[in-house]
Length: 273
DNA sequence: ATACCGACCTGTCAGC
DNA sequence: TGCTGACAGGTCGGTA
Image: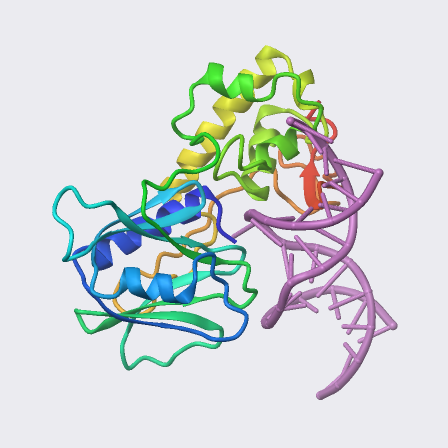
């Protein structure tokens, strides 16, 4: 589900709830484990650590950890969570029912639990011991010149380029379509064929869309925390991303649905060139 | 080196 | 009600 604005919202919510808490113990499910690091390595890193912060890097959630052993010079420890399509992180009372498809449970010093639930198992857990970095540029930090340079001489459709995490980290199907709609650019256009003016519009649209979505709390982040507090359910207004066959909200032309790089893509044939 | 495409999983929903 | 097939906001590895 989650793209940059959703992950940002989730990370902020978690930061508020678990920063300062200590991880007493860790349970990881057997089965085909959705782990990038070994279960032993994850457990060893997390157990006994204090969570000093939670932040977003690309589509990853990074928990910064402090271990009792190291002084200020100690190497960093981080728990990295990628939610995939259906992953969720829940802060729950220890006695709350454990949801189906729960793959990890962290018992916290506060008596609560941090749980990772992921029905489809596209999510990934890992630990990192050096500053974790995304593969591509951070969409909210990248300047226009760098942004434009990413697409130079690239023959792939602009939609594919936007989804390529090695170029920009954090954009997914929804926000790619939405920013292309606002910029008036068809998703199949070869990336290198965009004019400078179109790149400018795409850049501005992307910034605008991401900021709006973060302000709205993500597109459809529903109850990512159960237990204590704010439900965090918002609906972001998509202008472009209607279903295929529905009329464009701007010009009433029927929205087309095509498949690009295996992902369904919606665009208005009249508004987008 | 680059770019498609299927595979990885489970759940949901429309249509019959 | 139950079955089938299409689809879901993501990534990876193999292949061309």
